[in-house]
Image (cartoon, rainbow, N blue to C red; front, side):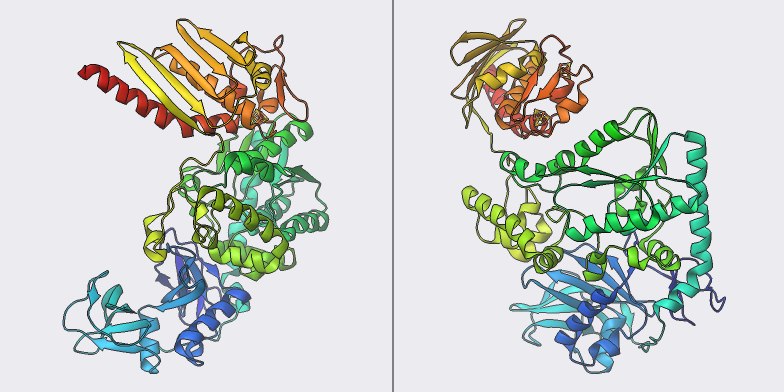
Length: 617
Ligand code: SF4
Ligand code: SF4
């Protein structure tokens, strides 16, 4: 919940103002209500955008020079509610068609523009409905306010070729609230100082208490972002001596890497750094580009290097303090403030700032005078800090990466162009970063008018040549689009209980009645497949994927409790004598897991068709 003191004109994290003591008003924002103060670059973008469309005086007239809040709202790309003077003034969003920021005035934004004659309006005699098109031509392009007979403003529409498209409607308003402005970030901090001090003290006490109860080594997971800087400072405030853990995914921006060094030396905290090196670039040709819901890179570039570091540099139980906030995602909302570390047996994670909004974090950092240690990317317009190839970035952020680090961006863009041309995708696939989704979402498709769908991104693909069902048994003939390196399959064979060499380039694996034949030319035949035999099919497909596509991520080496897996610099090798055949290395191999996921729908589909056919005959 966000409040606003109308007397001092500042946003508050509590209902009472710390300057004048007045009761503040509530400001309703789009949920989960995680606003942040607009920083210098944000304000510059907002000013230029408003003035470009509505004229030189428009920013002063509509937004003013007070504290501005930005709160994320869903758009095809980046989108924010703009709040000033405690009022929703409009939306700032990145237009994927025009590749530029735009400002859409709402309610008081429209009223203020209209009062100064900076916006067009049209009188309509019916109640507007969101999404409808009114066959009216008012201007060439841009926003038009909708008014009723009394002159009250009811909504806003965008002028399109075929008429005015109604974008937002609201209860009629006719009173204009003048721009108050005036308050600075210093006033904002003064008004909230006691509240944020109390929040910080509670958070530090929580860390102290949880650590006291749990014991073990104390680590702060540091990403180079503001939230992790805040939890590091809180942990030190609690009088504890944590180690700082940072995983360099190899696709971090240089500002982030140097921020880690600056922060650890400033606080005198030992930094443990996990390095993924070239793992992302090595994985690309096997996995294809990452996408939302297909973030193989989180496993190969973040999770696995981090786990390896835990194993090599930390011992016993570890308590990891993480700067995660409930407002960031549904998964984080569901999780409590202390939870078991899923990956490291007997270890725990905690977040002391689960209930904080971005306002809390910024207030805390300002209160502690830590601005100099904040990652400079925030002051360049970045909303969040992460890998520069992340499919969760928005186009506006990609433009910033391109501007700040053209050499990094061109490596990524060159790879994407090659991929797009091999896949037969058009120019928009790279330009509009459509690779971020395996299926272009409707809201993006509506804006850009282009759709891409590629669920099967891995370079290894399986095709069903034939499927037959006879009673409770099935047989299936599969073909891969690549040859199979039989030597590599032999090196992994102990994990599936061994294989027999039938002849040069041909292997056979049996389990009960089910028999699988694997040929070097990419053909795989499965006979007498029963329902329980499906597990065998997964294992065989996973093992072949490991043999053909292994990227050397070393997840299997990490997870094998028998130390049976080794890496010879080119491939993995499983020692038959030590291997217990538990299959854990296969389950933890991202290549095997994603390949099985991609392949199963076509295999199951073919078997279902064969089953239906056999029932009919
Ligand atoms: S995890 Fe180790 S023991 Fe288990 S199947 Fe793999 S290599 Fe064998
Ligand atoms: S086989 Fe091992 S090293 Fe290779 S991709 Fe799979 S988990 Fe990584």
